[in-house]
Length: 190
Image (cartoon, rainbow, N blue to C red; front, side, top):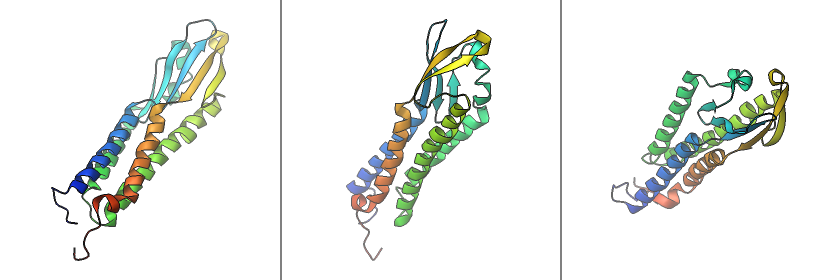
């Protein structure tokens, strides 16, 4: 099949790749992990700590900020994370126009890298830090706060944006595997 602008198969593949990019971007702007804090002597703080694909944000009272200050994402890391997303999305879109196996390998590779990015974020970065302060990745934990002479219950969970990151990476992998089926194999003479 020729790579013509009017090929409905190419348009279909392009639309599916655009959906994969949309899922990537959506996952990046949605929280991947959150923690609600319920102090023993105060009112609960919903989504007090939020981890996104691009970094950590929080709305903690002063008594708790000292425990998370070293975890706040520096501006340059946030910028690097957005650059990573932009480059990944651009390469996924570029894979549409690459002929032969190059396009499939690029698309699948970016999908695998994005899945690895999400897995490392959750199970190495977030879980590693939580182990240091004895808080579970998912579920309820009690955190003792010496300055408050008490503590707080912390409800933490992986959120939809995290699972959407896996879905976007998996979408890229599936599209890479079925690329030739969707677009059609090029003629041998090409």
